[in-house]
Image (cartoon, rainbow, N blue to C red; front, side, top):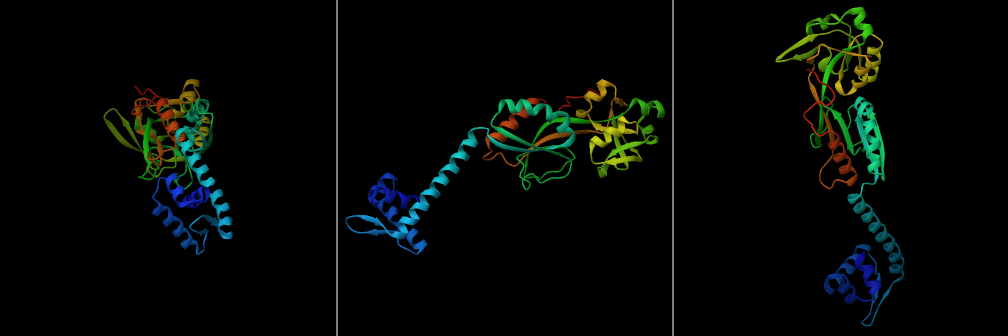
Amino acid sequence: MRVFAKVVEHGSFARAAQAMDMSNTVVTRNVADLEAHLGTRLLNRTTRKLSLTETGLQYLERVKQILTDIDDADAVASSSARKASGTLRIYCQHSFGQSQLAALLPKYAEAMPDVVLDVTLADYPIDLVEEGFDIGILLGLQKFDATMIARRLCMSTLVLCASPAYLAKYGEPSTPFEVSDHKILNFAFEQLRHSWPLSWGNEKGDIPIVSRLISNNGSILRHAALAGMGIMVRSSFTLDDDFSSGRLVQLLKGHHLGMMPVNLVYPSRRLMSYKVRSFVDFMSAQFPAPDTDPWLDLM
């Protein structure tokens, strides 16, 4: 199409070949192949000049628009590769999104004013590519496709906590095995349903539990804990405000259910758009020590 349009523009195969840095033979073959593909003649050729057929004239008008659209599309793609712009779709684990990401997004938006942020908070399994997300922020227990690139932001410690009202009524466990005697608010992971693998120092034990409430939503569990329903396991990044205000109390300090990575996940490093690269770099700068838990001192 480009060769055909250039031949018409210059009125000559030879001049079109020179303008496009091609041989006369290649230019002639391109136009001939195009006519063969379409099954019709586009140009009338004589020894003195070229002229468009009626079909060729109609085809040329459409070709010009198509080539303009292609150039525009290339320009948009090229620009987005160099500049953070357009819509950035982010999927984030619910509690991390509420407690951490929400406070960081305004800083990113200020630095990248041409990016529109489209953020989904949820805890359900997701195929980032199939559902059209550019980036996911996932906890260690959330699965993602092995072909995805995962960049660790930080570690999160799973700690035990309860409200002062609950502890006043039922007492505070002083050893891990006393947890079995308490009312449990449990997250809906199968591996935590019947026991909690508590670690302390160099020791570890599976503590049998009976759950009073099970949910896949951390907010429901938190509200139940605040209301004095039982002992909850919670990621450390969600607890700063509740601990500092005294609404919740950390139990068995030095004991935890392990540490989970908080991962930034995206489809590919190859041909990554600048908006994705800019967000990856921004989040990495907010969490410069990926192997540590920045929220909680368990000692």
